[in-house]
Amino acid sequence: MIKSRSDCVAYLKADRISMGVSGGLVDDLFNDRWRYVKLLRMSEYCKNTRKNIIIRLFYEVRRRRLGRLLGYSIPLNVFGPGLAIPHRGDIVVNDYAKVGRNCRIHVGTNIGTQIGTLDEVPVIGDNCYIGPGAKLYGRIVIGNNVIIGANAVVNKSFPGGNCTIAGVPARIISERSTVGMFSQGAREDGAA
Image (cartoon, rainbow, N blue to C red; front, side):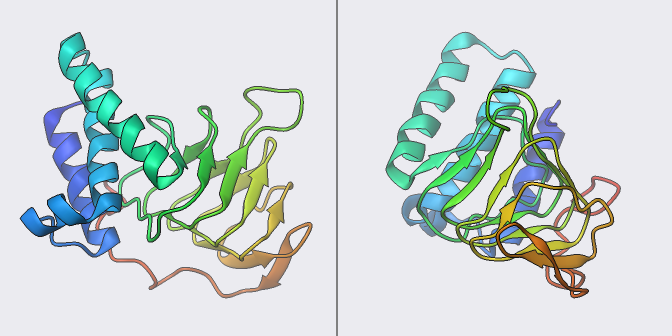
């Protein structure tokens, strides 16, 4: 969670490396996905550090407007550093979900609750790849270094991590993991 300006800078650096963008003026002007992630992090920073309400509203309104255009429904303080969103399209994440460092999330993904509950949501570890169309729901735990295949429906825990899961319902299909797949923009110690 971003608790200071230095945390915000470290998260943005990890996100930039994870998304493979330079973060320069061209990306700021023409890369909508990068702009969205920057607005997400600035909104988190302003909320968590209790900045002036005008500044908080400025970033939050811009983030929500761009999120609607891109199809993202991503709440604050869910993703750790190193978030990568490679494409525009529908991504829906529950407010109570928690996702670790270096997550790559694709379009059509839904991280939600079990029916009839508000806070029984997934907890996803570090270095996870979530393929297009994946649905994760209920009180489940996904370990570190997990690849979740396209259109997988994950409704049970895989806490051990270091595997590939896919199918409806999801099951382990391979021992292949994300080790070596990600840029190390967000190290274990939190430094970027």
